[in-house]
Image (cartoon, rainbow, N blue to C red; front, side, top):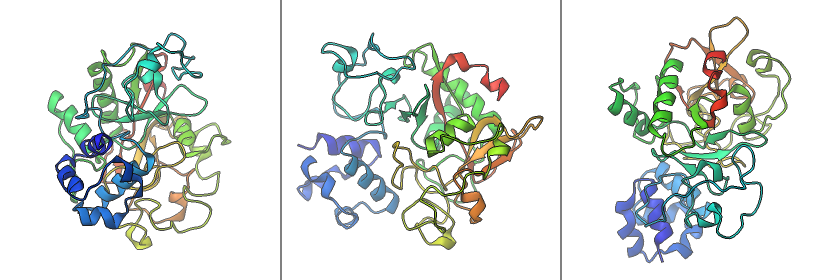
Length: 345
């Protein structure tokens, strides 16, 4: 059987490699045992592709890469009547419920049923997992160039460019906070038939971003006050970052990428979220401080080597009409009762 292999390869746009895998007699039962050397021998040439495949093979699913599997699946179903407040089911579902009728795959097409093991995947192939103790679904990786190009193709917005080579699965950069707002409004409208009317896309709040990185208790009433208050890094307490911990500054020698890398190239955190450190700074919804028009950015980038910037609690800030080569977007899906947060942020 190779349905799972086909699903994963399709999700990372490597379906053309399927004959090579089958030629090496690789089936679903062997995926978790494959190594980087095995993938290289099979013919997966780029390091980023091999790393993403190894992550998915280890997880044992095709979650996160694309909702457009070549494997036939049952049609999406309505939310379970017994779903708990905030949309995440409170416990096991009874036979015949919506959860029980979900296709047996690595993702769900219903955001009300999303879990870490089975993320919600939207029309652009973006996976979302729930954050602990809140109603927000958090995208597991940064917004890709391919995602933003879909928006540009439909709206006529300009495609931002970097001054270094990037592929469609790299994070989009040179996007402004104001661009992020327009993208989220477009995506919410585009998926009106796919997501409940009670939900919308937006940038994450600063505290939601902290929850995603594991900083659930921070003192301070503003992002400025919270910045750098908690010591430690995403990989641990000791600096510099170890090998394969993320896409960080080339001087650390911990990854092979001179600039940005494809999203999901490194292992996720315990919530199943990738690239919260390095690669690119990520816009947040909030203002940096009271009376301050600048907006928050989190996560640092592959061009930062200052230990203070790489702390999990570090905040940067930029004017909302500012864009640069190491500044990107990550989005969330959340109840629309928070619609006015765009104005209050």
